[in-house]
Length: 251
Image 1 (cartoon, rainbow, N blue to C red):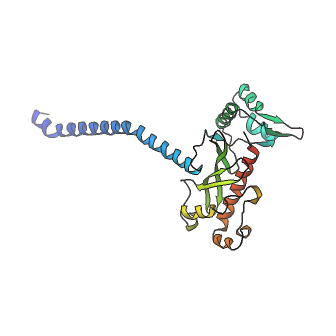
Image 2: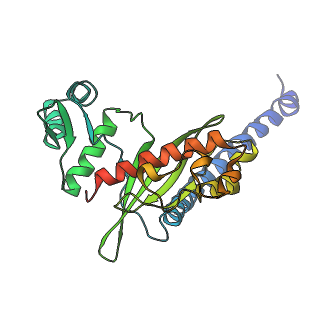
Image 3: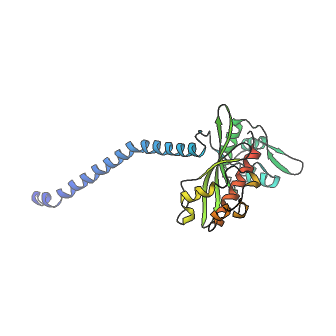
C-alpha cells in the first residue's frame, strides 16, 4: 500500500477510533465525577422519606426483623444451622431464652449493641422473615423512645407492596404511608388513594385494626367498596406490625 492509499483508506478509520476512545474516556470521567453526587442525593431522599413517615423525627439504625418468638426446632433449623461458625451460634443463642414449653423468645432489655449485632448476623446467614414485618427503626425524641418505624409488606389485590408505618411503643399506629416501590396500575393502587385507605387505620392497635369495611363506624365502610382485598391486606400487615412493636416494647 502506497502513501496515497494509506491516507485515503486507513487514516480516516484511525481518526474515528481516536474520537471513539476519547469520547468513552469523557463518559467514564463524567460518570465517576457525578456518581458521588447521585448517591448523596439518593441517600438524602431516602432519609427524607423515612423522616416524613416517622412524623418529622429522624429514625435510628435499621434492624432486620429478627424473630421474637419461635419453636426450638425452627430456632435450630433457621438460625443456628446456617451460622458459619460456633462463635456466631453462641452470639445468637446468647440473645434468646429457652422456655420449658420448647419455645424460644428474644431476651428483654437486649442492649443496642447486641441487637445490632444480632440483626447483622441474621442478615448475613440469609434468614428470611415470612411475615409482614421486614425491618424496623427505633425512633428517639426528647431523650426517650418515641416508638418504631416499620417496613411492612402487605399482600393485596394483584400483588404485594411495601409500607412504612410508625407505631408507638404501645402498638398504636401513628402514621402509615406507601413506600415508593408500590406496584401499579389500578385505581386503588394510586398513591393518594392508598394513603386515604391507610387513614382508616390510624389510632388503632392490635386486633382493633380493621381488616374489613364492616368493622368501620357508620358509613365509613362505604369508602372501601371496590378495594376490599387491598384494605384487608393493609389491615393484616398493620395488625402484625402492631403486635410486633407491642412485643418488642422497650428493646
